[in-house]
Length: 119
Image 1 (cartoon, helix red, strand yellow):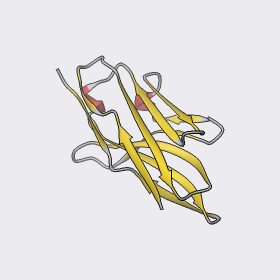
Image 2: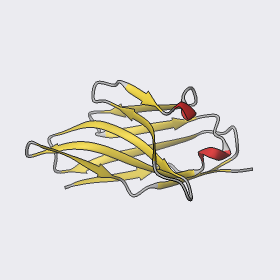
Image 3: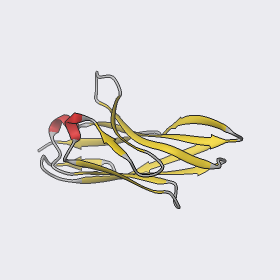
């Protein structure tokens, strides 16, 4: 089993910055793709950013140039640096990880952390 612990959410004014982190622990041999999703009230969950094990990153168009995803493979941790935040970035942000255990690749979700952008 894999546990994902997220931290770093909160309330910030428009134009401000926040940094999220998500650490994976438990029984696995390696972590492959790591990603951040978000779900605003009344909306479907959407992909924000994804990073491969070798560091290739992809972003939703709505966050390109403002958000940066990164990872530390030694710590099995993924980060999301969010700059120039807008009210429409308000959502619960979820960490998502593909981890290999006993040869099987499985997908795991974190518990979510709230990000609110408001003046």
